[in-house]
Image (cartoon, rainbow, N blue to C red; front, side):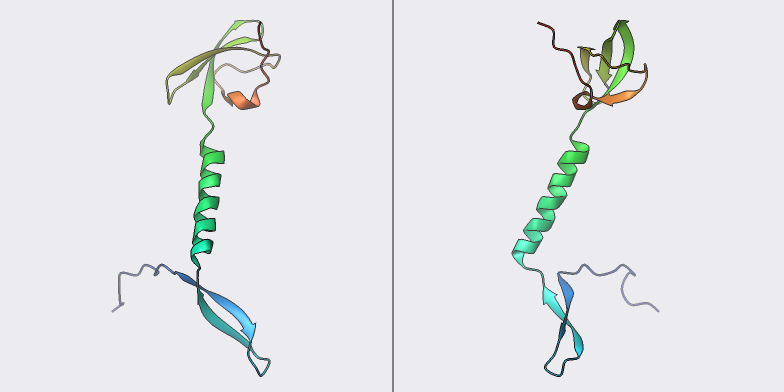
Length: 104
């Protein structure tokens, strides 16, 4: 009969390898410092913002030559952009990755 619910325990420490006074390899359990935990969460936050923060727009139609009607289904925002690139109707694009022509 297994002990516990079968899930691995959450660790707040890691194994550090080193040598003892006789020159033999040893493994010692060392607790994570508060700074290690802050770095871990900070890296997670940065990755989340970089990967999940960009909104994607779908090309609905080509209004004119190189002028496109774009729609974001998440926020229901609509954009009309002018670009030199050829975009495909129905595909999703990030606005940051499209080189837009500024109209004055």
